[in-house]
Image 1 (spheres, rainbow, N blue to C red):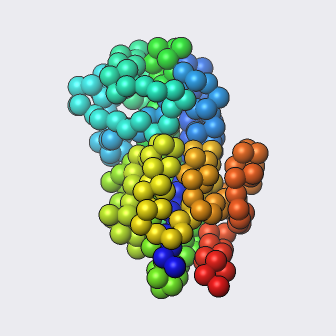
Image 2 (image 1 turned 135 degrees about the vertical axis):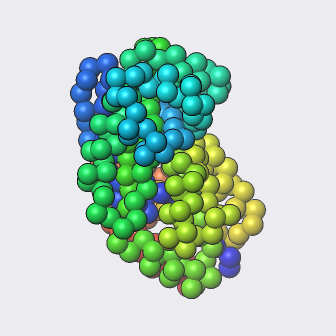
Length: 269
């Protein structure tokens, strides 16, 4: 029997530290579930910014973030939305925002880096949450992730069993590729900036190639892929509070990513 295991990244393979700043109310929140926050308002869209932290950290903090993004042709990826949107719609909201400053994002970057800088492997990503009702940026966001202690061992053990391993994640692609290299997952098996629909499609495509496809996730953005998979595994390793639909969709619930190895082994016997 051929088997593929698809992993989400943040919260599943990586322990994530996340900081959000509400640019309208000048408040900061830590370790918020951005997918859940996005889903709570149909006009919100979670956007990844394709910029390097070192490039923006020394810029003028008083300058509008939208001006920097448009002048430098910074591209973006649409990570999660509650309704169908076009790239032009997102670009218009992003590049014409008049509230978020570079300093808002710099503060998030510095806070996350301060918490993660001692880690040997860190994936640092920044983005924004747009809100159509507000006509622009509602939150600026930075997240830093490090692999869970047995994540690399999990991938190695699965591959030693002849199991194919994949990542389908909403994280920025180039950062995800470096993390995949560290974990030992082939780059061809790594899908970045994956929306819930793309994750579902990845699973559906793999079901044509493998006898069994297993989806391992931790958030509501993994739900469609979990339902599409032959078996769904829900990780509580970072956050034990999960929405009921996720709990109901899970065939297995784990507290450590390495438990995936035993589950796969049991399915083969």
